[in-house]
Image (cartoon, rainbow, N blue to C red; front, side):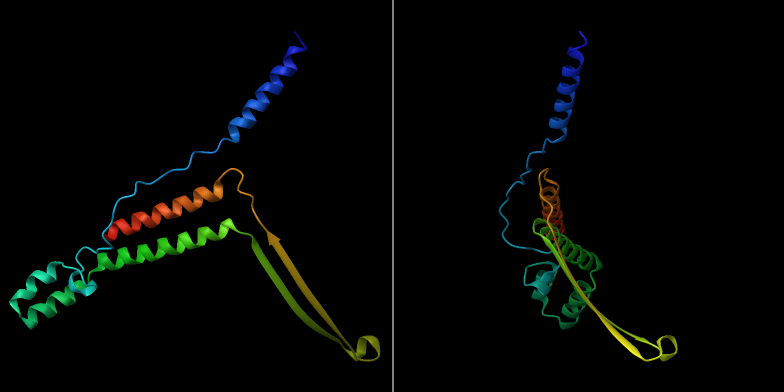
Length: 162
């Protein structure tokens, strides 16, 4: 019976290791046909029919100017466009994790030792150069899930504008 305990321990260790290595299946978003990016409340500013298009039939310059001023001062629209730009930048940033990270550095230092210490002036120069490259192997899907999450955030931000 004592010889059975190490086998059980090994089996439990292997089972726990395999369970920890399980990768979540890839999520798939539903593809919905989109006629193009429409911005709610944007009116003529973005070339789409909106609240301003209905009021154009009155041919009143003052009314047209008021509508244009209101649409240009639409803070909700500006916030949504800002979130869209932020989501695009985050998605672009997450794509960098798929490739290697390469860094390089260099430097130069000149040092002058005074005559008082050595009896004659000494000038030394030091040059320094460095190069480093790292790449995370995406064995467990962390990077891919990060890219998928940033794509989902971008899709959500686009949905706020539609």
